[in-house]
Image (cartoon, rainbow, N blue to C red):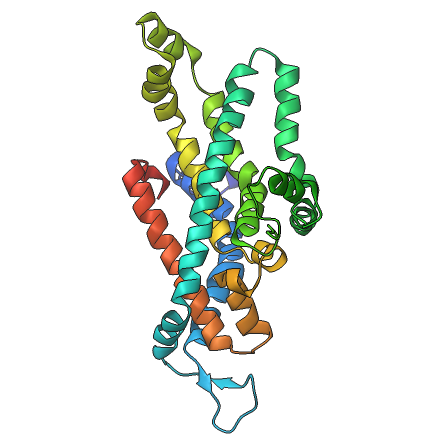
Length: 307
């Protein structure tokens, strides 16, 4: 008779193999990306797909206004482009001029805040707050304020008329000038902040080394400061040009029907004419054109890592 001491010991399950550290880190990275991927899929990819489907629709035969049915009518794009290409040119022209003006204003401002005021942290923080102060008020309210600034009875118009820079019956509101000025003002912070971020990391010893080698101020700026701040310039111009080209608030509040931009046309086709396919086609043409321009610009500027 077998005793307890002679009974065979129960089998012990082998311990699970440890998960390699590299695999665990990759799994954690994928899990962290899930919320962002879901967000993009629901609120970006799905609306884009629906918009593309809408851009190819055709009216329902005998249906009411605003009734469309699924189709694959590519002619919606060619017809929209043939009808509204002047508006596209005007929009990109306004966006380009506003971007150049914002760069001319924003770069010196960012240079002062990031370089000249670096030795005075309190002054630098105060200037930085002043740069972002416009964000504390509504975009629409800031644009409406320009209607008061450029009003026919305002100080600006009266002064320009007094020095004969504007005819006696001339005006600034409801003109291309007012639209571009509104775009420039509203997007200057978008240009200034990226340039400030680049210049704030500028090692001033490089500038001092250039001066020690008897380089003039312009040569020092052209060969040291500008190249090192170029990533900020590229980011600022993209953040300014892209929303400025598709903007419709400034043209609606400061312009007229002769100065309307493609954003105003899209808004009108969607909500007033109820022509959803044309509005969707215009949206896709605008998006594709901006993507192509941005790709060429970034490739030409030498910062390929941004795309």
